[in-house]
Image (cartoon, helix red, strand yellow):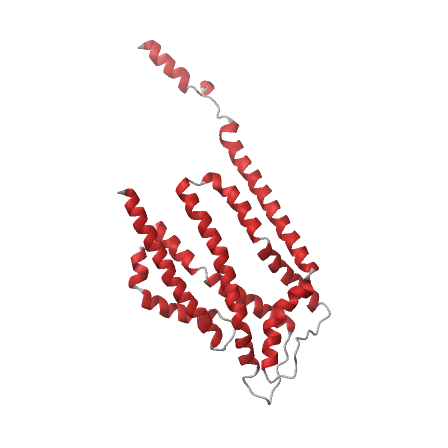
Length: 269
């Protein structure tokens, strides 16, 4: 008995406690931080390289960006057929901004792959089957939303430019149009991520997928109001072009979330 007490006392004495190995706790964290810094450097380098490539072809890129405006000007009463800028640095500033955005779009597949290779070891098999399809779908939906905005933009711009009739002339400022273009593309692209949000809410259990079905009328009304608020133009065509696809995407997201919930319940049985 006494020998057992002495043995326990030796273990609990401060001088006999085993110090934690730094490699057990610190090294893995530092290793992950090094991997994170490496991934961020690679992503930044790829983005900048793609932006430089885009800037080298800025004339062709700007023709594509300005196409909705030039098409709207041809359909309106204004005598101007090309946009104007009044500051010597306005053109180069817009070119750099457009190059950075287009570089981000061009480098998106590589950036997605680098992020996926970084987080993949920390995910379980079930999570891997979920994360990658959602990430790819997210990019596809953003591009689809931007495409819809690009196609509907000439209609909205033409309506706004000729709304006051032939007694007035619209002076198309290239800087203001550039901001309008990027905001509209971003608004459509981000809101087209609605089914991804619905699927994540349903899978995580925060909102049951049946709720999306039972409250669809209220959500449809919210989508219409949101489309009226977030679209920068005041024409009736742009919010309509946003609200209709969002309602369809809402129903698709609710259906996918419900299907996933039922499949998970069957797997657990």
